Length: 312
Image (cartoon, rainbow, N blue to C red; front, side, top):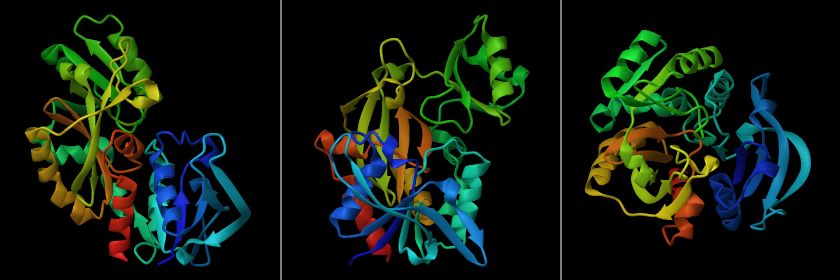
C-alpha cells in the first residue's frame, strides 16, 4: 500500500546522512512507495479546526551532498496524511511540548510516531525514574546545597541539564573541584528547569551502549566509545561507534521496560546503558539505525516501518 507520510524534522539540508536515523526512515518509506512531505515544526498552524504545516514534497537519495530533491512548496492539512514521523531533535522545551499538543489533534487518525501524548509524558531523563532499580544513583533538583551534598557523598558525578540532548552541557565534576560553584551558577542561570546529577560510572570509558527497541523488542545495538580527551560518548561530540552484543543485564533491562513502551505506543525508542546502569530512555528522536546496519545488524528502518504498517 502507498501511504501519504509527513516528516516533522529539522531542515533536511542539515542532515548528516551517514548516521541520520530520520534519513534512514525516509529512505525506507520511499523504497516502499510512500509519498513524503517534509516540514519544520515552526510552520505548524491551527485554524478553523485544521492543523496545517508549510513544507515540500521530497525525494531522498543516498548520496552525500545531494541527498534530497524538494518538490513545490505548499501548506497542507496534516489530517490528509496517513502517517506522521515526529523527528525533530530536542531540546525538549515549551516549543517541543506545544507541537505534541497540536499533533494530538490528528492522532491516531493520522498515526503519529511516536505517540505525541506519550512523548510529552516521557521525557528522556524523567521517564527512566520509573525503573530506578536499573539506574545509577541520581538526584534531580535546582537546590545547590543538595547537589553539593550529592557530590560529597559520591565523590565523582555527572551534572547535566534535564532537557538537553547530544551531550551538550554535560559536565563531570569531582569532590574538591574548585570550579564547582561557578559551574552551578552558570547552569542554573542558563537553565530554568532542575538539573540532573548522577554518580559517575567509570565503565563509560569502555562505552555507552545505545540499544534500539522497536515496539518494545530489541532490534539492535551499538557501543559508543568516548574520545580519549572527553567523558561524553555522544557521536555528535566525537564518540566512536563500534559493534556490540547485549549482556544478560541489558536483556533484563529491556524486558523490564518493554511492556511500558508498548502500552504507551512508543514504537521507536533507544536506551542508553553504561556498565550495569540505564541512564536514559530516548523517545523523541532516537538515533543509531544506520550504525547498527553498517556493522551487520538488522535493518531497523524496515522493522520500524513493519511496525507502523501493522498498526494501519
